Image (cartoon, rainbow, N blue to C red; front, side, top):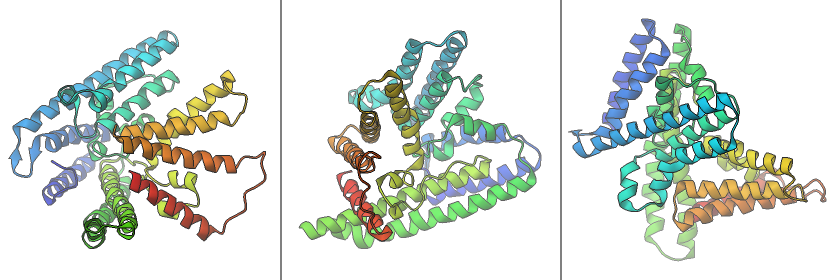
Length: 379
């Protein structure tokens, strides 16, 4: 069943909400509520349709459970090795094993890919990698199976994010929520769910009906440009609406997930844009790919020019971002396009060069907006 895609699904969420309120008022711990609802909605999202049980998707539940068990086993074994000694070889092996299902889904033959594929494997893999990286950094000392499972396949965000971090999730998983906090969380949940309804069920369909499909039906450069902007706005409202639903339902369960969008089309430059668009993904790549690459390059003195590490780190991070979306050429080109934009902006901002001619804020925002929309056309 497609999450947040039907009124039947929202009807189920209503009963979940009632159950959460009753359980919370009775003093049931947050971790039990999260684990129980995650197991229940795992069956709903992967094993049911709007018309009832679907035997074929039931096999997907097995793949999700197998994926979760494998990722926990990899992380738990690596944690045990890490308590004995720090090993770069063990870290690389753990990262490779954690990435293996996603690599099979992306690059293997259709038959092999179907053995591991399920909706949300990209997002759950990045959550699993976050755990392995934090273990290597000595930030995680224990890994309870139920807690890890709840984090990895947390149902509000399993299929399309946001990408949460394990240490942040753990703090809320183990909390005792008061009645006052319950009211605050439900207030935030209602606000975000209504925002999701406005974005995904009102604005995005209107853009699709009155602009996107009509631009797609025409030909010529003017129609192409119209399609580019229509697609950019439709993508934002549809994706931001989904994220609002996921964050709202998470609040209902006591998990205050970080926001995923912050008025991205008002960004002043390309760096500012990626601090506002798909924030959970861009921050994950910044922390775990770009930052670690630049740190290693700086410590190891890999390059004479101190700026080269940052340039190559951007190319690596955004190249991986493109491949994370898919293996088709246009995804890789999309990632490299944004890498070049970021590198170009960094080169113009270099401290050893004359300062750039300052642009009026409105001009800077307009230029960034058009460059971003062209990237979505590539996408």
